[in-house]
Image 1: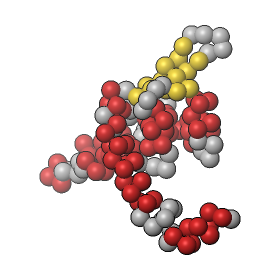
Image 2: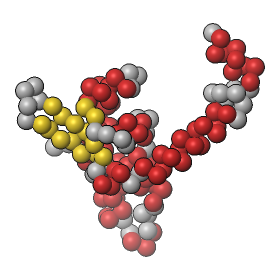
Image 3: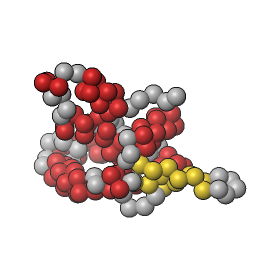
Image 4: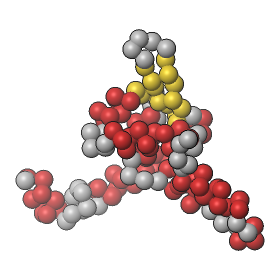
Length: 138
């Protein structure tokens, strides 16, 4: 049996908790499902097309195999990502966004815009212009 995701654990807690306290929080739910170091990056690569595990691994060389597998499983369990196994030799597995996963697409436009604005504010990576140039030169 697989370990429950953060959202599944939260939903179980909320349903067992006193209904007067109304612990269900949309922000908490969003962070439970999409939060973490890698999930948004994984989703950004799945926005345009389904991808194979190896493609995702190459696109994110800094993520460990264990973490990528864990994050993909959690996204699949939460209904954001679909895993499709093709009966070929060798077997092929594709990951794609579900209908619920597609609903995050407008958020990425906002995130990209915010990220560009943030990088442009001082000369790149959040450092004052001269310092950013010195860091980039090294």
